[in-house]
Every structure is written in structure tokens, then in C-alpha cells.
Amino acid sequence: MSLSLPSPPTSTHQPFSAEKRAEIARFWEENGYYVCENALSLPEVEALRAETARICAGEAGEVRGALPRLEGQSDDEVLRQYLCIHFPHKISALMVNALAHPAVVDVLTSVIGPDVKAMQSMLFIKAAGKPGQAWHQDEDYIPTRDRSLCGAWIALDDATTQNGCLWIIPGSHKPGILWEQEWHGDRRFDCAMESVGFPYSDADAIPVEVKAGAVVFFNGYTLHRSLPNRAPSGYRRALVNHYMSAQSFLPWHGPREGEKVGMAKLDFRDIVMVAGTDPFAYKGIESRAAPHVRSAGNGGCGNGLEYED
Ligand SMILES: O=C(O)CCC(=O)C(=O)O
Image (cartoon, rainbow, N blue to C red):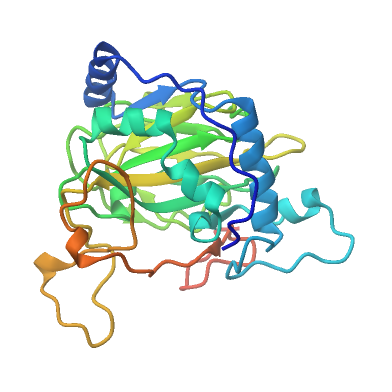
């Protein structure tokens, strides 16, 4: 990782008052999401956009599945190839910095508690024509033991219904059930499975249209999806970081080969603390995740999953 880059623009975030924090917590409890407008300034957004191009061009470090920049290839041509890069924070100091953005941390500590750790980042580029993600709950993919998972979706472009903004079903976190998942076979969506059998319909969903610099927070049990980017050109970039309470273990991956550990002790320790203290600091930090390209499904999904057309 190169650490010789210019330091990121300073955040202009003013810490929230106790009243504001209580209001955020109440809204979160009721709705399972929260939108923080103007969390990042334009210079901060622009720095993240520039870093997105650097990461996609392979200039920040190795990204599994990414193609090297061809001679004469523009940033736009590079960016248009990708739907999403997972774990950009593993190769970018700026992305690490964004994990602990003061406005993001202010909301996280209002809804999760004082001790918060990050374990995942995803950098959606979602150029025009790229698919969305079918209905899902993030705890299906990142299972916390205490149900404290929270996504922070940082808009790097204005997100609209046309370019594939998030859709959320407010209050859908409340049953605390992880619904069954099925393969959708639908070209509007990428290769991830679709949650089914829940007692809501598409009519219960709201589009979360936000300006660049806003952050959409959503609970790990909240049903959400996004539709394809149907704009004629451009991107719908978003940096999505995931967090949970540092007081809980994260049984995300099985034991390493040859490692003997009981189910109760499984704990993914490739984390970044963003607030408070880590009660399990004595276990140390490990490096397990590596940046890679997420499949947009154009060449098929593999694993026997086929689109219906
Ligand atoms: O940004 C998107 O289009 C989808 C993001 C999403 O569903 C997620 O981060 O869980």
C-alpha cells in the first residue's frame, strides 16, 4: 500500500449533539435505516472518486480479477469495466481513512454503541448498463452474533431511480428473521441470491435518492435492493463500508486449515477499529481479506447459476 499520497481533505463535520444522536437512534430503531445528508464535503467526495479510478486501474495495488490498464486507456474506459471492487481499504490509505470518517462514526456510535469495528468495504462503480442487487439482508453475508451489522453507503455520485439508487423496506429489520434466499435468474440483478418469502411487497419499498456526499446507513436485517443503472452514461459510484459492535465476535469464515477452534470462538479478526476500545485486542489483527472484482454476471455466474434468457 502506498502511503505517500496527499493527505485527504479534512472533514467539516460538526459533532452531533446528544439530542441529535438520540433522534438518530430513535429513527434507526423504528425504520432500520438512516440518511445523513452532506456527511462528506465535495473535496472529500472528489478525492474518493480519484482514488476509485486509481484502484480500478490497478495503480493502488493488486485487485484479483482486474485487468491491467491498456496503453492509452482513459479512466472512463477503465471504470466502465467494473460493477464493484471488494475490500478497497486493503490497498488504499484513503479508503482506510474513509472507514473512520467523523460523520460516519458519529452515526455509528449513535446506533451501534461506543465500540465499533469495520470488517468490509465495497466500492461500487456501477457504470451505465450495469446490474443492481436483488432483495437481500446483509447479515446473510456477514453474520454477526449480536445482530449489530450496519452498512454505511457513501454516495460518490448523486443516486437516483434512473441510475440505480438503493431501495429499502423501512421497518423490515424488526422481525429479526433472515429470510430464505433463492436464485433469481433475472438480468436486472447481479449474481447474488434474492431473499424471498418475507411479508412485504415491492410497494412497501422506498427509493433512497441522495446527493453525492450523503451516507445511507442500514441495519443488517433491513431488506434492500438496487435496480440497474439505466442512465445513458456515467456511473453510480458508492463506497459501502460495513461495521458492527466490537463487543461481539464475527463468525464470518471458518477456521483456517489445521486450526482447531470451536464454533463459539470463531471470530474474523481482519478488522479496523473506528470507535471506542476493542475488548478482544489481545487476539491481535490478522489479514484475511483481499481486494477482488465482483462479478456482474455478464459472462455467467458460475456455480451452476444461469440467467433465464
Ligand atoms: O449499491 C448497491 O447497488 C447495492 C449495495 C448493497 O446492496 C449492499 O451494500 O448491501
